[in-house]
Image (cartoon, rainbow, N blue to C red):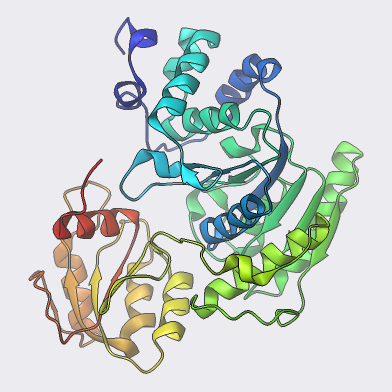
Length: 389
């Protein structure tokens, strides 16, 4: 890395940062936070962990708190188009000016060795924590983990657990129970368990409660949502998003904040079953759990799936789940070493008797679903001309 690392702007600095890693070293971000924490007046921390639904849950909550005149930061990842999407401050994506000020501050405080070793996600997490100083709330969405995720470098006041399923097994565990344990061990005080498709997740929560008591002599409390019909929600959101919304309502009740469901009606959820044209829906989901939710959303409709996938995702299962609603698949070509071989995808489509091609040509009489990852949605929006960085 170049010698004048402390003299470059944020965009240039991030080009040197590692986006993906094979092994998590929590000590780097932990040591960095130890250097920074005396300069930051940290607000009430709400940590969101789970497999799917973290982004929408966080945005529902942040939006509502902002509407109730609280100062709030929502930290999420990754972004679709602009880096600024990762840090939402009081109703808007953070400005370049605020980001640069945070970047300069962190550069001044941290030793050059820490600056070099911090990953892209870790460094961005520290920026979000700085920006949240003196706010009322910060909502931290975990990356792929829980206990050793960069977002768990601070003590959280409240943990929200979204739906947990198999994903990122190489990092988190080979069963739903192992993954749930890894995620839930991030809890420091109280956790609320949202909608789950596996009953064992709730059992794991109480086992983790006992583990933490035994290991750290610390009491945490656990609430589970057993009903999702307490409030009538008149919204245009997809059905699966309403389950996340009920978790948010449970959180607001725990915080003793009055509930007015009308305040959710104008929430903007980028890339979460988002209708960007009369016949085009984009969704940044990337696993079988997300596929099942979208299958339920489209029900008996037939869609043209614009798709691609990372190599480490269960793309074969995704296509199997979506097959009943697929008219055809258009494989969107992406030049990235993490993406699966397009011919492999083509063969899987053929094995399922799904018509597939690489011809990205949109027709007015077709219903399109763009799905597979943030990268897929980003590439498609670039195809449409929405590509400003």
